[in-house]
Image (cartoon, rainbow, N blue to C red; front, side, top):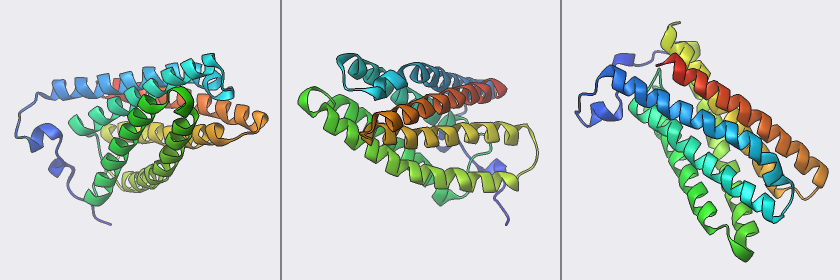
Length: 216
């Protein structure tokens, strides 16, 4: 399958006809990915107590985890928009990827904002179901991107893109386990899913930071 010439791929700056120095776009990519990575590491530390029970402490940890999810999503999105590194070349799949990220981040913000008082549990569960459903689309996008990367030239950009997409894949599986932990009523499986979410969040954070530093 023939893909478009990478030189034809443009960032937000290019689409706006704004000249941005290469080092500036690399800095945006690096900061966005490091921010997402640090947020994931914090999430790794708080997600298990946030998901294990419905106490006041659990709710507080849950708020922190939700903010980490929002910050991480925005950080990765900025990197993708302003410094695309060997990005998805199929226009339709690329639009699906960006749209999924935007909707997911927007849903997290809405559910986080609404998850207070008596309606907190219902909004948290709603957010989990939405995120799990969107995670299925994100999984399809990641699989397609890996397919493209398998046919791409073996250069530094490809290596960074593989690291980046592997991070995204860990984040997607983490969304599945987190949704399961929120919706599961059995204490033992809830804890197991919460621990799995924490592990995946830690791996995601490390890979996101690695991708950011590699492109700096």
